[in-house]
Length: 287
Image 1: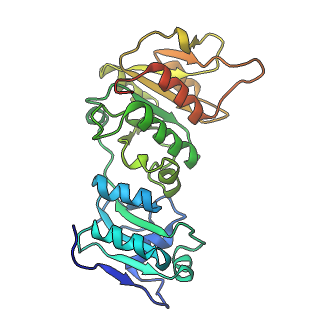
Image 2: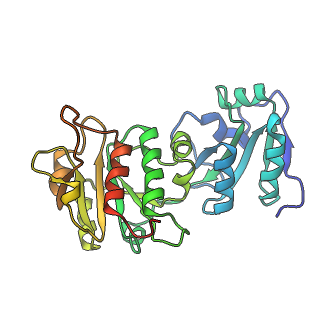
């Protein structure tokens, strides 16, 4: 625990070229436009005191700095005490904080974390009993929601049960985007993930690792979820709302499954569908 203060009050004017705050000035971007010292793979931003606390306590990602509103001084003191003295905690008035980030930031607690390189698929899935595969999800809310589902119904790193990793195609949005993390309730920081660069051909590696690819589909010839039977290592494939999975991805699956629905309703929100399907498959570790 840090016993020395690392809280640094900020006063106006703060230069736009102040590299201490560069990541906070680019919150609207998925990735920073230029590399940062000590963060060769870029950084991400976590928002909200509960999420930031989880990030610090998990210890999976290195923390570069915190930016906290003066009105949350008690939270700043608590979080600063959890960090090494070398990690700065910048304290700003609300107007200055809004100026730094470029819009009103109501929660008043931000943290900058260092990204990790995407792990190889084989290493990511080595001990997993199931995984989720996403294609074409361009909505950060949906990606964050799926990460929360993966944590709740599949396990997370350090929980005592095999984690349920999430694999994304090249077009799906960033799980570590600020909004994705917030919607996931911080679980995007706990659920391991990687991307399949060669899409959809790269899906072939899953079979070699003992996984059965299960595509959620509304096709009439798909199997009802209740009729699926036990699959020991399912790889649940989900497409974007509207188009769903592409034909090439759907046809590459070992089995296509539908969630029975009332007549006149042809689809569910992708997060809801993921939760229903994954719960139906009952991965190990659920209580």
